[in-house]
Length: 111
Image 1 (cartoon, helix red, strand yellow):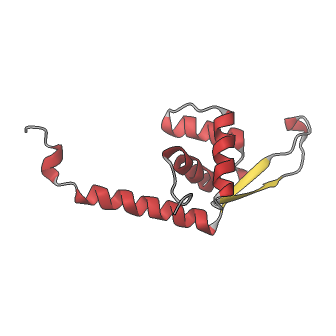
Image 2: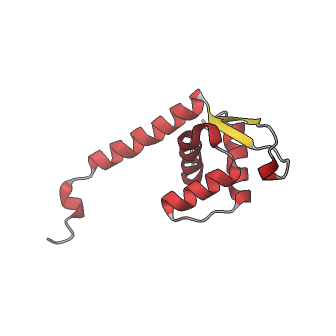
Image 3: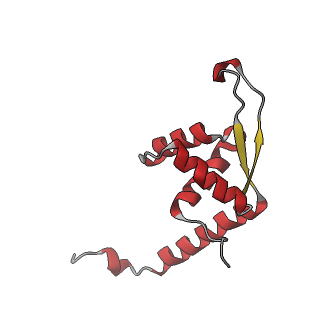
């Protein structure tokens, strides 16, 4: 079914949204991914992926109140939906299944 699979970046972003829970907004997501994966992505890349995830029904968003620290701007906060959780669980199951099928000899490299 088109639109139900997670790409690698979408999976990383959705996992990060879940881990940040109630403080998942663009800049925080970008910083967390950079810190955890040593992978730098732009804020526009994060926003584009969040838009795709929201269109797929894998996350929802809302605006938080404006704060002086943000120059009066509101945070656009994201949360994982039940469908997003299921998509992450499916991705994990597929990866674990593939890892479990690798024979030990496959990684011995001529030992």
